[in-house]
Length: 188
Image (tube, rainbow, N blue to C red; front, side, top):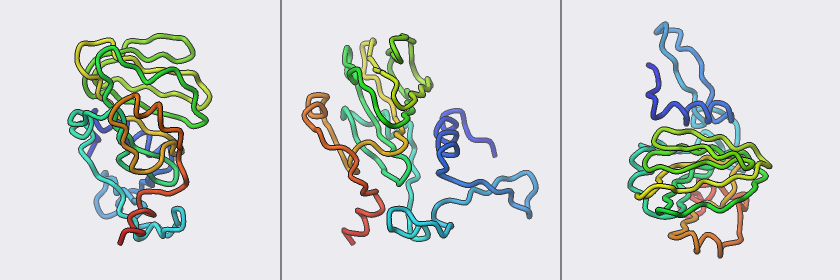
């Protein structure tokens, strides 16, 4: 089964980042069987991957239902999934990260600025920002620009919610090494 266009960018990013290993199912030629972190013997930050629950989410719905400026959905050892909503005229602010970053727009219009190159973006646009590149995402439309982003490796503390851009600007803390799975174990 081919991934749908809406899930393809996430599938590509996850595969490129080593988030999943894909092996052919020998019993059904032509079908791909994904071997997730749940079935491997590797460990993630001290948590055996065999006990990891991972995350399965309708990312389009999660993105378009989100009204927070930034909401961390899931943090793994090597990547982090975040949904964002930028209000009309709002931007993330010009920044440079020491990590790679991927954006996918689900609703709204805007522009991606990477090293001063401005490119229009809208629904289904994908943007890849290499570590060290100066970048910004700007909402140029009249409705919220709703998107998701993947940081590789993680950039924010797991569970972070910034309701507004002002909240995000006040928060100076970054990823502390704790993943969603590690924090869930501590709560059980």
